[in-house]
Image 1 (cartoon, rainbow, N blue to C red):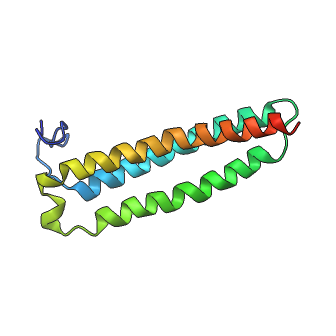
Image 2: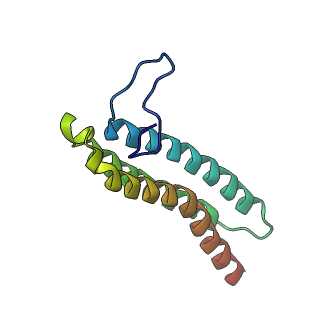
Length: 126
C-alpha cells in the first residue's frame, strides 16, 4: 500500500507499477466523465418528464456539456505537462488530492445543481 496515496502500487500479475500522477489523474478524469454523463442523463431525463417543462432542461444540458469539457481538458493538460520525474514525485500528492477532489465535486454536483436551478426557473416562469 502506498503511504502517499493510500492505494496499492501492485498490478494483478504480482509486479509493481511505478507511481505516475499523470496516469492516476487521467483515470479519474475518465471515471468522472462516466459518472457525470450518467448523472446528466438521469437528472435531465427526470426534468424533461416533469409536467409543464420547457426548453430549460435542454439549455441546462448544453451548458453542462460546454462546462465539463474545458474543465476536464484543464485537468488533463496540467497533469500531462509533468515530466517523468515530476510524475513519480510523492511531493505531488497534495496537488493530486486537491485536483481529484475538485474534479469529483464538479462531476457530481454540477449536473445536480444546474438542473435544480433550471427547474426552479421553470417553476417561476410557468
